Amino acid sequence: MTDVQAIIDAIALGAVYALVAVGIGLVFGVMRLINFAYGELITAGGFTLWWLRDQPAAVAILACFAVVIALSLAMERVAFRPLRRASPATMLVATFAISFTLQSIYLLIFGPRGNPVSTLSGLQGAVNIGSLHIRWITFVSLGCGAALLLGTAFILDRTNIGLHMRAAATDFRTSRILGVRANRVIAFAFLISGFLAASVSVLLTVEDQLVTPDYGVSITILALIGVVVGGLDRLWSATLGGFAMGFATSLFGDLLPAGSRVYLPSIVFGAVILVLILRPPGLFAPSRRPVERM
Amino acid sequence: MPEAAAPALEFDAVEVRYGAVPAVRGLSLRIDRGEFVGLIGPNGAGKSTTLLAAMGVVGVSAGEIRLLGRPVRGRAPEDVARAGMALVPEGRHIFANLTVEENLRLGLAARRGRNEVAQDLARIYDLFPAVRESLRRNAGALSGGQQQQLAIARALLARPTVLLLDEPSLGLAPTVVQAVFGVLHEIREQGVTILLVEQRAEVTIRAADRTHVLANGELRLSLTPADAGDTERLAAAYLS
Image (tube, rainbow over all chains, first blue to last red; front, top):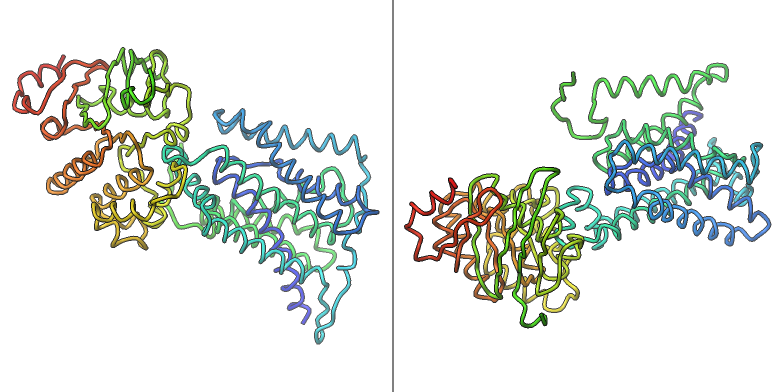
């Protein structure tokens, strides 16, 4: 039964990682940009929850969404839009610059020691089902993760702006020739991406309550690796990759003996290297002919 | 010039460069409303670049392009599309991973309102029965001819004043080419101004009200349907 519980916990964490993967994948789809500053959006959400710790939870959560979405849109408008015609390398370096700048700002304002968030600490409570001991946050993560992923899929599949985003992700130039507004599509991708980052902030601060200036970095890096492992070209494969990374991290963390947990990153990254050697396009992406490199 | 009196599309001493290399040199061309104009010439003559410049996809280094009397220069492709110009690009560029219906819906992106979409769709289905029969299929599964029909149908759904077509006959069987040109005539009958870039010189000269030959980025010759058999002048213009 311990194994079953570990699998349930892993699915819940996988759902949170999948949200990060979708947030990164949406922006990559329309801009071909891997936003390394995504983690700083999650951190901003965490600090907002801490800042409003004395307010009702609903107020703090609403403010968290407002701040993170505003920051995501500001990133696009102030930093990425002026660089849209720049080379991919320049854009990538810009995301690092934004990431480090925001981390430094957080450090100056909130200090290095971390600030505890207890907005939804009640979700740490558990319910016993037979011999299983499942925390409420597991149910909430699963429910929110599924709802947000389905909601994103609904927007992409059933709305005009979603259709425009899918078209822009396939062929941006032709989309614009047809009248699809580049600025609107990209801003909308950042808006959804920010919404998902805020959701991750709320869910993650229940699991990991101490918000530090680099709070969102580790989940973003791991989800990003998951995105690459899953296959960056398609949103669903990127999402599955993110989920798989969260699932594997949680499961190995639970199943490994306490003394061996220090090897967890080595095991996970070893598996990543193996996957990329065996299936370069990604674990869930359609196979392609290998590209010969000099 | 007031918008009502302005030509549909006007190129005024247009220059386009790719870095230091000139692609279009001093192109001046006036296309009146409802006209069907052809643009032919050898590979690398600047035909596609002319269309891309009109659409705002590539920048104009000198001169001016006007759509209904209003300058296009410096405007984004989506703004040009919303102002009434549609381009059927070379190679069709349909979205293979989307359904035929979704491709058609993308054609609505440039329309300001959604009035009379049903009537326009009915008209388009009359022109392209194969499109109507494949609405739920992935566009990538269509034949080359059907994809070309879809690309034209998608452009027409924007209700353009000016329709630009870049080599719509490329890679199509002769019977399909005939059908495509037949459709262009019907589109023109509906009042749409057409600028057609083609490699098939004779068919274009016969079909269009007038056809211009572009070589090395410059206009070299203008022809009417009566000149369709004049291969000597045509060859001289191509080789000039």
